[in-house]
Amino acid sequence: MKTQKTSEKEPFYDFIDMETVAFLMKKNRWDVKYMAEKVGVTPATFRRWLKSTSQGYLSADAVVKIAWALKTTIFTVLSYNCKIVRGKEKAQIPKEK
Image (cartoon, rainbow, N blue to C red; front, side):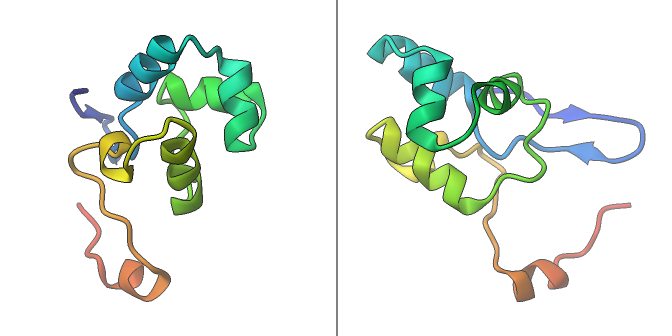
C-alpha cells in the first residue's frame, strides 16, 4: 500500500489506492484507455489518477465505477485512511492545521 505524501502547505491524501488498481488492471490485461472508457472519463484523467497527482476532486461515484469495472469491492480500491462523507458531514470535519 502507498505511503502518504505530504506537502509543506497541507497534507495530501490518496483516496484510491492506485497501486491496487494498476495491479488489477495488469492482471486483467487492460490498458488505461479501456479502463477510462469503463469508468467514463478521458484516458488523460485516468492516467492522472493512476499517478495520484489529481485525486482531490474524485467523487464517490468514480470510486464505485472503478470498483465495478474491476469487479471488486469498494473497500479494495479505497486507501486505508479514506473516509467518504456527505455534504453536511464534510462541513463538520475539523481542518488540519
